[in-house]
Each structure stands twice: as structure tokens, then as C-alpha cells.
Image 1: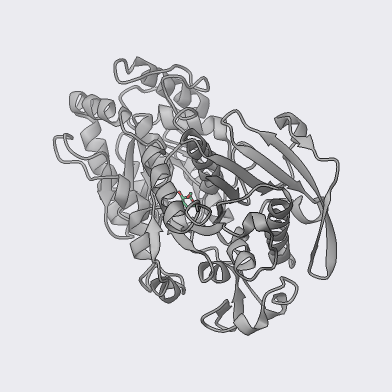
Image 2: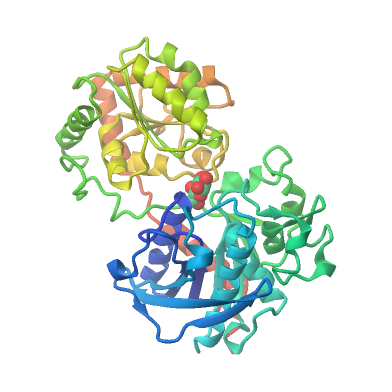
Length: 483
Ligand code: GLC
């Protein structure tokens, strides 16, 4: 099959969150399964085409949208994984201060990406079996395909798949955006893209895509209910083919403690001394006392309400009565950032807050910590708990979404299960789970057995990549092209 991803961000080019990891690692997994994969993404500020050896096509393309003709340069290349990439450059529209903005023309920026991507595919002279888009930013791809806004023999048999990575981001705008985005006004109805009197871009994609997926089976069920459906549960329930929940994997070549050169030392289940060395060097980096038997709890996240950082803040003074250290890595909401700063200055020998978003450092956190806290209010999949397990770091999570699918509560003897799980969005329940973790940590032998067991967790893409391929086939990719 020829599968095309269109996405706002992708590792190694750009990243605001887990979406970039998934686009990077799932595309590579599909190539390993012997399919052709092309990823189309925007050249956002910070991507240097030369650093990735991308070649610029001689002829730019011109794409009309919103009453204006946009000139788009195409950079192309092939990653070591075999994934083909097409990076689209339009300085004015794509290169802003951040990948996502609150600028008035935000819907046009992503509408342009969608139309330009389809335009490119239409003229590239190669048939496409599946166009797979991700989140609202590329949700107009299925809409434009279904409405023939861009059409070509190459795209005739293409199945459109739309994956929800986070239902909270829907792209809701005033109805004055309908015409600039070349949407059909007659579809501004509840069965179409109308949403409480506004335009909902994600909804436009959901009701026109051949297949809709999300990133874990539990989240696929949760978003069908009003409590977690963010206003779209009814739309999702009405989809004829339903919502498939396919768990994310991680890139196991990048995230491998036995080969990871970003770490102080490497380790595997047969010899854990490297993990102890990673802990020591992380404590040193963070300015925390180097104490081998003090449990080190990590939190690595975008600091937003979704991640439940406020829950951790509210119980921190009680947690810190125990012999424990807390290390936080991430940036985000100002209120949460300053709360963490205050905590770190109040407990300088117990709490360290690194207010950065840095991939390299995150490896050292995953390896050096003993426990990883993820008290998420909701979590479509979550990648951190998977990476933590692979680094022998025990997750402490709320039972929600992908966390519920991947973390099973440990029993007393630490023999079954792989983490500490709590149920309700409640700081005291989080405290309980963390204290259970600290207590278990003191049984050194059982804990070591647990860490060894976690290091063997399969978090690769293999199974999930097969599920995507089966879905592509079922929704028309390849079969429609067959005689
Ligand atoms: C979003 C979700 C996260 C998921 C990621 C990749 O960032 O919040 O749970 O793992 O997308 O699908």
C-alpha cells in the first residue's frame, strides 16, 4: 500500500507533544511492514531543511485558499527509516512563533496545509491508497477528498483515516471561516460541521472520513460518553463504522536503555548497576543530595490541567514528609510553573524543577527516576508511562484512557501488575498511590525484581501497526485498487 500521513508535527523535525512521536514512529513501523509511507508536514520555524538533507524542488506550487494564492515550496527527502517526507514551506503562514497559534487566521493555516498536501499528491503521479490525518489540523483532508475540492486519478481510490490524539482540540471557529476554507455552506447543519452555531473543523473530518480512530481502546469507549466526549460524543456514537481504539507504541530504537548514549550509563535486566549510575548523575545534575536509597519520583509532561499537575502540587507537602525526592521536567501554564517553582524553593533538597522542554534531558529523567507520576485527568494514550516501563521506572497513574489500558495495579508482593493505579481525580487518591509506591520501594529485593520485569515490557509498534494496516484494508485502501 501507499500510505500518506499529513500532520502538523513529526519527530525528528518538530515537536509540541506526543503526536510528533507517533507520526514519526508509526510511519517507520509501516515501512518496516513493507509499505510505502510518505509524510507531508509544514516547515515550521526551527526546521532547517539543510540539517535534514532535504532537497528543494525546482518548482514551487501555487495553492489558492481564502481569496489568496499561496506559493509553497516543497522540500523532499527520505529518512533513514525509509519514510519519504515532503515538508511544505510558506513562511508567512507556517513559520510563526510556535507550531500552534491563537492568530485569527489559524484555521486558514491548517486549511492551507490540507489543500496543499492534496494538491501535491494529486500531481505527484503516484496512486495513493490511504491518506491518514491526525487531529483537527489535518481533519479537512477527509472533507476535501469527500467533496472533491481537490481531485485526481491518484486520489480516486484513497481511503481517508482520521486519528483523534486529543479530543479537547477541535478547531472551533466562527461561521465566517466557512467560505475562506472552501466549505460547502449547505453542510453547516448538525449532521455536517455545524457545532453550536460555530464551525467545528474536527467534526467536518469525523463525518466525512472513511475511518475514525483514537489512540487507545479505553479512550475510544470513554469519548462516546458525555462526560469525556467534549461535546462530540453524540457525533462519535453516530459514526457508522464506530471509533477504533489502537494503542500507540514507541520507537524502541530511540528509547532503549541498553544502547541510549544520552545516559550516564547503559543497562538492561541482567545488570541494573547502570540504572543506579543514571540516578546518581541525575541527582547531581538537579542539585539534589545523591542518596541511593531515597526513592526519586519523576514528572515529565506538558504542564497543563490535563496532566493533573495541580493534584500533585496540592499533596506535595504531605508527600514530602516521607523520605522522597521529586524531579519535574516540562513547561506550560504559568500558574503551574510558578507553583512548582515555589515548591522547589521551599524544599531545595527534595524537589527540583527543570522548566524546559528538552528531549535529551527527558531520557536522563526516565532512566534516573524510580517512579514516574502521571495523574492525568484524561489521557488518550500517553507515551511517558510506556517509556518509563522500558527504562525500568514504575508508573503511578490514574485509571483513565491509555493509562488504564497499559498499567495494571501491582499486588502487595509486586509479583503481578506493572504500576500503581488510582481511580478518581482526587489528590488524596494520588497521594495514596504514591505512598504505596514509596513503601514498596523499601522492599529492595522485590523492587529489583519488578524493575527487571518492567524492562522486558513490549512497547513496540508491531501489533498496533498491524491493526492500522487491517483498518486501512477494511476501509478501502488497496482493496478498491485491486481488480
Ligand atoms: C496526545 C495525547 C496523548 C497521546 C498523544 C499521541 O498528546 O494527549 O495521550 O499519547 O497525543 O497519540
